[in-house]
Length: 571
Image (cartoon, rainbow, N blue to C red; front, side):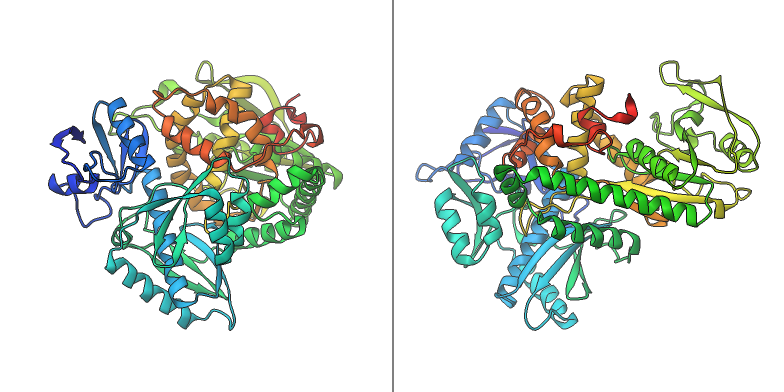
């Protein structure tokens, strides 16, 4: 069979894997920055272990049927995926987690470890064992992981009957997988097997453990951080950086999850099934309300006159700003809401960068000087006319919007660059400024080994909102998402720790509601769509979640209303 790998023609012989062909073409390298780690065929992701042409006596697997169908559909074109792509990074993360749990199984078979969430560049992992996990244990795990990587074990899938899989995981003590698989809608389940260790990670893996060379471990009290490759240099593990603000907000979210008895998808599904999801919604929303009240109290106690709110896309910044404003009114303040967007420079003055591209999320797109002139005047009690940026004309206009702070007044300013140190000039008294970071930092996991990335939940929110309120297709939203994420990496995430407070806007019940909105739209995407693979992966993930018809229970001021509609602040 003749196929083209990154445009290079190559004849695939019977029994040869994609990895064999990559090596035959001299495309394999030792550097993670350049090494192929998976393949894109007709918009679907495949491991490099897949075999395009089977040998006569080879027992065919359904995955091979799927790949050959994709090759026919794509005209034999194969695009190699590398770590620099977000899907490449997801594949790499799954594999180093696999290596970690394999090491734990060999060293501490009775321990119970769980991947909780990502804090910056590291994955927070808890370890429950007797005696307590120690720094020496962490060193032993690191050494064992290196040993597993050096052994270069191939990562091959094996298909099990779903009942067989459930029975195995029950015997093996992986009750989290047993509970999740009871919600699986298919009669089979694919696993990875090495010795007596059987596990699964929801998505493709690297070809072998030898590819997962770049990682490190950092011990923490009774657990550890698994450090991923550095964003600056993928061939080096990121350096551990203590992030107390993020750590504190995740710890609070863990407490909330325990309070609500909802730590994983199986917990949520059970509540949807028995109807207690309605009480879950009421408690979750009450916890949000209490947190907004606490933040408002802190703002007043600090004597702040202006609140700067920033956060990544689909975090609920607008609703958060309004809910903080409501709580400030309860405390006798008169908040005034403004947007940094109104200080965008006119589009006609924007010039492309050295690559001929326009970065509309750059801090230079904001008229920082005028913003500081107006902010300083407002803080001094002067009357200021605030501009309005018209996105249709791409220009800033004066429309007679005058603002003046009274003794009980307070500014709430929302915008992408709210935490950027370049936003405020030295003449602004920083003691009068309170910085609030908001983000949907989900702590709900599929199971103990598979976390739900916060980015995935924000993408679901955005797809629903873009369709419901802007009439945008799934393809349009997905087509912009990589650019959105690049902007967040550059302009938001580096400054999140500098916030005075962080508000986690995630809701443990929201996936059950979002699924009802997004699932039919995803199923309608045709197989020839350029974003078909992302859609398929999202559908696979959502197949584990039970949707809930409970929107009558969601209050009109809820963060979720910003995305599914019915938000009181938009009326």
